[in-house]
Amino acid sequence: MVFMTERKDRRGRKVPVFLVQAYQRHAAYVPVKGTASPMDPALQDYWDRQRGWKGHYAYGHNRLKYAIGFRQSWRCPVCGDDLLDGDPVDTHHLVRVVDGGTDHPSNLEMRHEACHYNDHWLDDASICA
Image: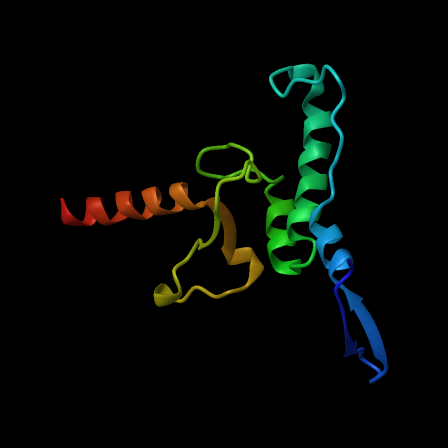
């Protein structure tokens, strides 16, 4: 069974849209070498490329988040772990908007949700002390 609908493209022409096509975009799988271990320092370049592919599949549709993640080599700047390890990810302003920061990519970074909240909690706790 295939689910389908029609929509108009940029030129106003009707084009079919299939559910299978929408699903395949997120169903990409990058095979890993049989004995490759992320703990092996000799394979660091290999695992960096794997993170790049995972980032492309996870955020290829969102140019801003893809650019930020790519700039960070898909690593959380707080804990240093892989951003694409399955944990929720937040976008963090380096300079708060309240303090004059903007939504420009140079003022943004991606962090694990837990790292983001913990970092803000530590900032707030130091104010109260």
